Length: 193
Image 1 (cartoon, rainbow, N blue to C red):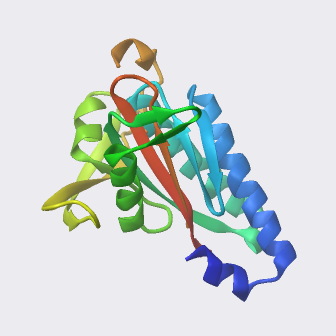
Image 2 (cartoon, rainbow, N blue to C red):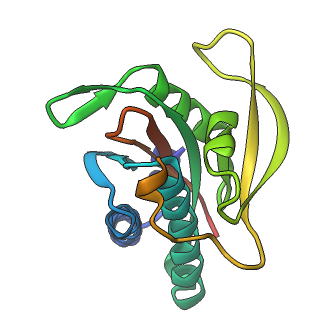
Protein backbone atom coordinates (compact mmCIF):
# COMPACT_ATOMS: atom_id res chain seq x y z
CA UNK A 1 0.00 0.00 0.00
CA UNK A 2 0.88 3.65 0.16
CA UNK A 3 2.70 3.38 3.50
CA UNK A 4 5.13 0.84 2.07
CA UNK A 5 5.75 3.15 -0.89
CA UNK A 6 6.26 6.15 1.41
CA UNK A 7 9.02 4.23 3.21
CA UNK A 8 10.78 3.44 -0.07
CA UNK A 9 11.19 6.97 -1.41
CA UNK A 10 12.56 10.33 -0.34
CA UNK A 11 10.12 12.19 1.98
CA UNK A 12 10.21 15.30 -0.24
CA UNK A 13 9.25 13.26 -3.31
CA UNK A 14 6.44 11.59 -1.33
CA UNK A 15 5.16 15.02 -0.27
CA UNK A 16 5.11 16.22 -3.91
CA UNK A 17 3.22 13.09 -4.98
CA UNK A 18 0.60 13.38 -2.21
CA UNK A 19 0.04 17.07 -2.89
CA UNK A 20 -0.52 16.52 -6.62
CA UNK A 21 -2.68 13.47 -5.94
CA UNK A 22 -5.00 15.44 -3.65
CA UNK A 23 -5.10 18.36 -6.12
CA UNK A 24 -6.13 16.03 -8.97
CA UNK A 25 -8.85 14.37 -6.89
CA UNK A 26 -10.20 17.62 -5.46
CA UNK A 27 -10.29 19.28 -8.90
CA UNK A 28 -12.12 16.26 -10.34
CA UNK A 29 -14.68 16.26 -7.53
CA UNK A 30 -15.43 19.98 -7.84
CA UNK A 31 -15.53 19.94 -11.66
CA UNK A 32 -18.44 17.48 -11.52
CA UNK A 33 -20.30 19.22 -8.68
CA UNK A 34 -19.12 16.87 -5.96
CA UNK A 35 -18.20 17.84 -2.42
CA UNK A 36 -15.14 16.54 -0.60
CA UNK A 37 -16.33 15.15 2.76
CA UNK A 38 -13.08 13.79 4.13
CA UNK A 39 -9.37 13.54 3.35
CA UNK A 40 -7.68 10.36 4.47
CA UNK A 41 -3.96 9.66 4.61
CA UNK A 42 -3.93 8.50 0.99
CA UNK A 43 -7.41 9.18 -0.35
CA UNK A 44 -10.60 11.21 -0.14
CA UNK A 45 -14.31 10.76 0.40
CA UNK A 46 -16.65 13.03 -1.52
CA UNK A 47 -20.33 13.25 -2.43
CA UNK A 48 -21.83 13.52 -5.92
CA UNK A 49 -25.38 14.32 -7.03
CA UNK A 50 -25.44 11.39 -9.49
CA UNK A 51 -23.63 8.23 -10.57
CA UNK A 52 -22.93 9.74 -14.00
CA UNK A 53 -21.13 12.71 -12.48
CA UNK A 54 -19.09 10.34 -10.30
CA UNK A 55 -18.07 8.28 -13.37
CA UNK A 56 -17.12 11.45 -15.25
CA UNK A 57 -15.06 12.62 -12.26
CA UNK A 58 -13.25 9.27 -12.04
CA UNK A 59 -12.39 9.37 -15.75
CA UNK A 60 -11.20 13.00 -15.49
CA UNK A 61 -9.00 12.08 -12.52
CA UNK A 62 -7.38 9.22 -14.41
CA UNK A 63 -6.80 11.48 -17.44
CA UNK A 64 -5.28 14.21 -15.24
CA UNK A 65 -3.01 11.65 -13.56
CA UNK A 66 -1.76 10.38 -16.94
CA UNK A 67 -1.08 13.97 -18.10
CA UNK A 68 0.79 14.71 -14.86
CA UNK A 69 2.85 11.51 -15.21
CA UNK A 70 3.82 12.40 -18.80
CA UNK A 71 5.01 15.85 -17.68
CA UNK A 72 6.63 14.75 -14.39
CA UNK A 73 8.04 11.22 -14.72
CA UNK A 74 10.23 11.71 -11.65
CA UNK A 75 7.14 11.90 -9.40
CA UNK A 76 4.73 9.78 -11.47
CA UNK A 77 2.05 7.72 -9.69
CA UNK A 78 -1.12 5.78 -10.49
CA UNK A 79 -4.56 5.85 -8.90
CA UNK A 80 -7.11 3.08 -8.51
CA UNK A 81 -10.80 3.94 -8.32
CA UNK A 82 -13.85 2.03 -7.08
CA UNK A 83 -17.42 3.14 -7.81
CA UNK A 84 -20.72 2.17 -6.23
CA UNK A 85 -24.16 3.74 -5.90
CA UNK A 86 -26.61 3.41 -3.06
CA UNK A 87 -28.11 5.23 -0.10
CA UNK A 88 -25.36 6.22 2.32
CA UNK A 89 -26.15 7.38 5.83
CA UNK A 90 -25.31 11.08 6.22
CA UNK A 91 -24.30 12.65 9.51
CA UNK A 92 -22.98 16.22 9.57
CA UNK A 93 -20.46 16.39 6.69
CA UNK A 94 -19.74 12.65 6.73
CA UNK A 95 -21.36 9.70 4.94
CA UNK A 96 -21.08 6.03 5.82
CA UNK A 97 -22.90 2.72 5.49
CA UNK A 98 -22.86 -0.27 3.16
CA UNK A 99 -22.86 1.82 -0.06
CA UNK A 100 -19.68 3.57 1.06
CA UNK A 101 -18.09 0.31 2.25
CA UNK A 102 -18.85 -1.40 -1.07
CA UNK A 103 -17.14 1.45 -2.95
CA UNK A 104 -14.08 1.10 -0.73
CA UNK A 105 -14.02 -2.70 -1.21
CA UNK A 106 -14.46 -2.26 -4.98
CA UNK A 107 -11.53 0.14 -4.98
CA UNK A 108 -9.42 -2.41 -3.14
CA UNK A 109 -9.93 -4.74 -6.12
CA UNK A 110 -8.68 -2.13 -8.63
CA UNK A 111 -5.09 -1.74 -9.74
CA UNK A 112 -3.30 1.50 -10.58
CA UNK A 113 -4.82 3.28 -13.57
CA UNK A 114 -8.07 1.30 -13.29
CA UNK A 115 -11.65 2.32 -12.50
CA UNK A 116 -13.91 -0.48 -11.26
CA UNK A 117 -17.66 -0.10 -10.80
CA UNK A 118 -20.48 -2.20 -9.43
CA UNK A 119 -23.43 -3.21 -11.61
CA UNK A 120 -25.71 -0.55 -10.15
CA UNK A 121 -23.34 2.17 -11.42
CA UNK A 122 -23.21 0.50 -14.84
CA UNK A 123 -27.01 0.48 -15.05
CA UNK A 124 -27.39 4.07 -13.85
CA UNK A 125 -24.87 5.41 -16.38
CA UNK A 126 -26.15 3.38 -19.35
CA UNK A 127 -26.11 5.41 -22.58
CA UNK A 128 -23.77 8.16 -21.34
CA UNK A 129 -20.68 7.13 -23.34
CA UNK A 130 -18.95 5.10 -20.63
CA UNK A 131 -17.99 1.55 -21.50
CA UNK A 132 -18.17 -1.23 -18.92
CA UNK A 133 -16.18 -4.44 -19.35
CA UNK A 134 -17.18 -7.29 -17.08
CA UNK A 135 -14.18 -8.32 -14.96
CA UNK A 136 -16.10 -11.13 -13.29
CA UNK A 137 -17.31 -11.71 -9.78
CA UNK A 138 -15.28 -10.77 -6.74
CA UNK A 139 -15.58 -11.60 -3.07
CA UNK A 140 -15.71 -8.27 -1.21
CA UNK A 141 -14.78 -8.29 2.47
CA UNK A 142 -17.86 -7.84 4.65
CA UNK A 143 -20.36 -8.70 1.90
CA UNK A 144 -21.95 -12.09 1.38
CA UNK A 145 -21.83 -13.63 -2.06
CA UNK A 146 -19.92 -12.52 -5.13
CA UNK A 147 -20.29 -9.04 -6.58
CA UNK A 148 -19.83 -8.47 -10.33
CA UNK A 149 -17.38 -5.67 -11.06
CA UNK A 150 -16.92 -3.77 -14.31
CA UNK A 151 -13.90 -1.86 -15.61
CA UNK A 152 -14.91 1.61 -16.78
CA UNK A 153 -13.64 2.89 -20.12
CA UNK A 154 -14.64 5.70 -22.44
CA UNK A 155 -16.23 5.34 -25.88
CA UNK A 156 -14.83 7.05 -29.00
CA UNK A 157 -17.14 10.02 -28.46
CA UNK A 158 -16.10 10.49 -24.83
CA UNK A 159 -18.38 10.71 -21.85
CA UNK A 160 -21.60 12.69 -22.27
CA UNK A 161 -21.09 15.65 -19.95
CA UNK A 162 -24.65 16.88 -20.45
CA UNK A 163 -26.87 17.87 -17.54
CA UNK A 164 -26.72 14.57 -15.69
CA UNK A 165 -28.20 16.14 -12.57
CA UNK A 166 -31.56 16.07 -14.28
CA UNK A 167 -31.30 12.28 -14.59
CA UNK A 168 -30.42 11.23 -11.44
CA UNK A 169 -18.39 8.30 -12.29
CA UNK A 170 -2.08 3.93 -7.43
CA UNK A 171 -4.31 6.18 -4.80
CA UNK A 172 -7.66 4.97 -3.57
CA UNK A 173 -10.60 7.31 -3.14
CA UNK A 174 -14.30 7.13 -2.62
CA UNK A 175 -17.25 9.45 -2.83
CA UNK A 176 -20.92 9.17 -1.99
CA UNK A 177 -23.71 11.16 -3.60
CA UNK A 178 -25.89 13.41 -1.52
CA UNK A 179 -29.02 12.55 -3.50
CA UNK A 180 -31.43 9.84 -2.40
CA UNK A 181 -29.54 7.46 -4.67
CA UNK A 182 -25.86 8.26 -4.25
CA UNK A 183 -22.75 7.64 -6.27
CA UNK A 184 -19.96 6.27 -4.11
CA UNK A 185 -16.31 6.29 -5.24
CA UNK A 186 -12.98 5.26 -3.64
CA UNK A 187 -9.30 5.88 -4.71
CA UNK A 188 -5.70 5.75 -3.48
CA UNK A 189 -1.98 5.51 -4.43
CA UNK A 190 -1.11 2.00 -5.53
CA UNK A 191 2.09 2.25 -7.55
CA UNK A 192 4.79 4.48 -8.90
CA UNK A 193 5.29 4.51 -12.62
